[in-house]
Length: 426
Image 1 (spheres, rainbow, N blue to C red):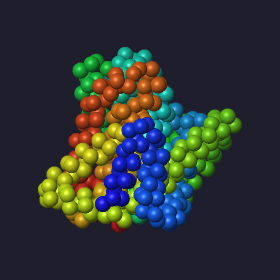
Image 2 (image 1 turned 30 degrees about the vertical axis):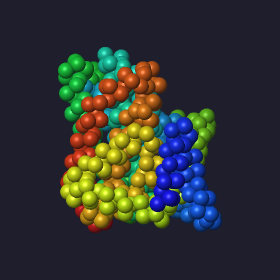
Image 3 (image 1 turned 90 degrees about the vertical axis):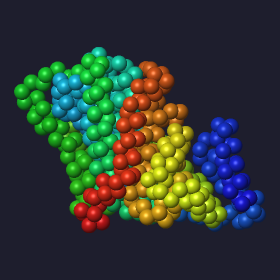
Image 4 (image 1 turned 135 degrees about the vertical axis):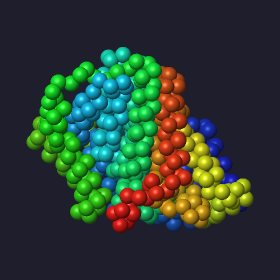
């Protein structure tokens, strides 16, 4: 019992004094081994094996692809098409922001990247049309989280590696939940906009949408090429990530002719920074998780939950509340790598499918992108709109509540998640 006390004691102490999450994870895991007098070489080897895997190669490639798409003009064309599709309806520009986040999320796999790409274009446009500045930022930050649910999804890649589950199956399972979350946000946006008098873009001219689709056809084809290749079995998710990079380079250089050397360098810089950050977190989180498993922490939690109640719906409510709370303070990838070894065995023992649990976990992390104090998307929206986090947080509450309701539906009705993978025979 000493090891868990040292592990969690050191972990929470380091977080309280402001240490980065990677330091808290690594130092607490190392403290346990030093206290036991064990040779921690095996711990380092375990952590190394977590990042030395073929599926992880998809991570930097998807990040680079998403970064390049902004410089290549793909994100701008997708946003323009979404804006024209919404038209002058109530909340039309908000609808466009959500739709654009779905389009871009189906390429980038990143919540912050989606928020930045869509927010830079949509927040100023919404403000010009009379939308409240804080509301514009809150909506964009909330819809930006769709990038981690709608495949390809970087957090799903991490969950697949951590839980040893099929990434392709996870991608398929994320499609309907992503659409449901987007639909919930659209309903909330329409209701609020109707009350506040927010409208869409001016009436479009005949043929304008057709012209935009024709000019943006290569942008529209990007998710078709990436996801179509994965689901048809033409290439694996890791290979698809590399294909998406070369596709973006081809479109940006030879078709749109907007990808310049400076944009390419900037994309490489942001990819290197983000990939390094993620891999270091993976390294330390795996070491942390190894100690949890060795000390049967998941078994203790399972026993505690079953002593509390044997009702699966009630356990789901407790788990979802816990995950949303954790997501308010921990980064998404760290959350996935810490809680998966703890909660996955518990839920599997209760008859929950690992793919179903993974999608619910990622959806809860998606909510964390738009909840302070950590909420990465909130900070991006705040900097673009030039408003405080506090103002955005209040405006984001209706969207957060809608997303929680959708996650509850996904948890209670597993077929909403597993229907597509079963249809494709996975």
